[in-house]
Image (cartoon, rainbow, N blue to C red; front, top):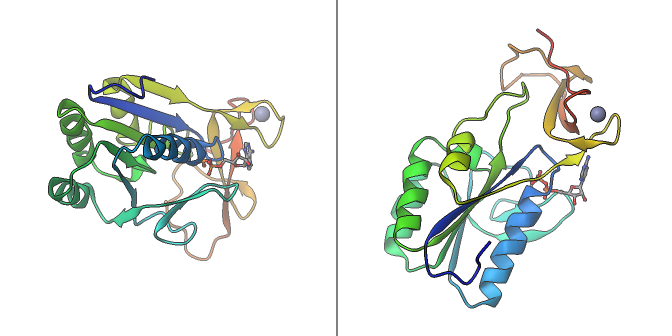
Length: 192
Ligand code: ADP
Ligand code: ZN
């Protein structure tokens, strides 16, 4: 990745949960800040994993960010600000509009860094992420460690009351105890 380039580009960081996507985004943004670049960082309001105005990785690394409800809000925000780098975490939770925002910023010479899940719990391509991977200059696909066999994990296992989730299970399940873990292709289960 050409960090000093004045040309715009899109960097995409993907992988399953626990792969270190947030950690990597934080690392890149910190380096950009050390280089005195003005960075605007966003995450969707849907991600209420930890305290709100921060991107927080699973190992406790933190960075301030702006929480937005939609891609449109990012657009409105960046139109008013001068910046060099646009960073977006949990990009899979934004709608199609986020693609155009990233493209426009890159075409205007900005460095765009996005991170997000490339697959949903079923192991299928997740919303806008695959499209961003296609149009981005640099794609970094990270792996976690499979909780079952300890090999590199590329997928996110969804568990409902400790059992693999069904293909058709709704995203929000009232009253159920839900959890997610990193798994490899062999250990990943989706009940049909
Ligand atoms: P992501 O944004 O991809 O969900 P994070 O950056 O939030 O990942 O967290 C990555 C950190 O999670 C790792 O550095 C490690 O400390 C921790 N971790 C917990 N479980 C796992 C696992 N199964 N595989 C790899 N890292 C894990
Ligand atoms: Zn495994």
